[in-house]
Length: 372
Image (tube, rainbow, N blue to C red; front, top):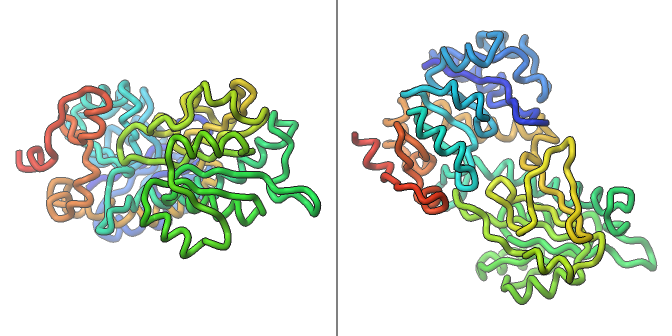
C-alpha cells in the first residue's frame, strides 16, 4: 500500500502523523511511504530522518493526496485538504465529526473511507488512540491554567500551591477519566486543592483507592458542580462521550457565580466544549474573557508539546496503521472489531451513530458497509 503523510496545516499544529520509526516499520513490510517535505520539522524530525527510514519525500500535499492509498494525519482534514480526498481513499486521523457538520458533509461527498482515531476502542472499553493525547492534554491543563491564572494574563493572580500562610488554588476537575485523572495528578503535584467530579461510582472508588491522599473526589451532579465552581480558582472540563458532542456542564448564567478572574480550561473543546461559553482558540491566541471569567479553549493542546505528543501518538497508532496497510481496511476491520469501531465514513455513508445523532444524518451500520 502507498501510505501518505502530509504536513499538518491547522494553525499552530506542530505534530506529524507518522514518525520515522513508523515509516521504517511500514517500509519493512513492503509498503511505500510518501512524506511531504518538512512534515516532521515541528516535532524534531527532518527529511533525512524519513529518507533513512526508507520513505520518499515529495514537495507538496497535493502530491501526497494524489499518490497515496491511505492518508495518515493528526488533525482533521482542513477544507483545502478535504477537496483532495477521493473515492476509495482511506483517511486515518482524528476527525471529531459530531460538532463539525462542514467536515462531515465534505467527507461524505468525497467518497473516501475515514477511520477516526478517537472512536477506535479496546477490550477494556477504552479509547487507545485517544488515550495518549488525553494524557498529554490532561497533564498540560493545570500548566496552561496556572499561566492563565496569573494576573498579567487576566486571571485572579493566585499561585497554584500557595505559600506558607497563604492557601493554595482551588481546582475543580469535571470528569475522572484519562484527562481528568492526569489533570488532577499534576494540579495536586503543583500543590493545589483539587476535587474531581465524576458520575461513575466505580471510577470514584478507584480514584479514592489510588489517589485518596493526593486529591478529593465527589459524585457529579448539577448541584455539586454549581456549588464547587463558586469557590474555584480553576475549573478543568475533562468530560467525554465517545464520538459525540460534549455536554454543556457550566452555563453562561453560572459564570456570574464564579470569582472574577477564575479560569475555565476546556479540554473537551475538540468535541464542541463542555462550557456554554467555550469557543475554540489557538496557541497563538489561547485565552479570552467572558463575564470576568478567563477561558482557555485551545483545540489542539498537545500540539504545544509536539515531540512528546507525536511519539506518544505514533506508538499507539502504528499497529493499527500497519494492520490497515497489510490487510486493507475491510479485512483489518473484520479481523478487529475495535478498529471497526473507528469507522465513521465510507463511500458517502455515515457509519457512526453518535455523529449521526448529533448532526441529524442517517447512519448505516459498519457491518453492512464492510459486507457490501
